Image (cartoon, rainbow over all chains, first blue to last red; front, side, top):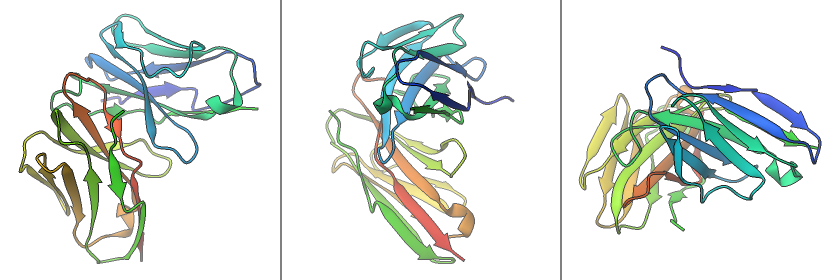
Length: 116
Length: 112
């Protein structure tokens, strides 16, 4: 079956512009996660959704970042007024249950964001 | 802030060698420990999810053990092959938290 799909795969944008990143999880997966990896850093948690709700937004780096999920499926991560430090690979993952259980994460290929 | 540490940071081995890496984590409120393999230009792929102290899991030439009381997990690769070259990530979930906290990974290069 289809895996987690992310688009675009690459995005180059000018500082100050808004960007929208999309994630299509595996059908039937209730949990959806956004992580990012900046150059030379580990995977940094941003936000997770259980269904359409996001109980934990503590990982979002600033109020320029927002995310939503509709229909328990597609999620979009929006970064407003992008800054150079936002440059990173943004990874989306989904799982059947929240990872407090035995459920592994299934990752997409990521969106490489470059802010010039 | 959870501190999940992996060592070594990078490792070069010859084809056929066996190797192992370590993931260390705080032992309090442990819930689950995950291992992932991340090959260049691909997405991270789940290897194991372990929840019980003393758990041992195996997948082909790769195996993992878990000690929740002392806060560590080992990943073993027997008879390394060039296709095993990747970054190996461990990740922890604790208590009521629902996200995984990842370590920085061990980058393995298997030389032919």
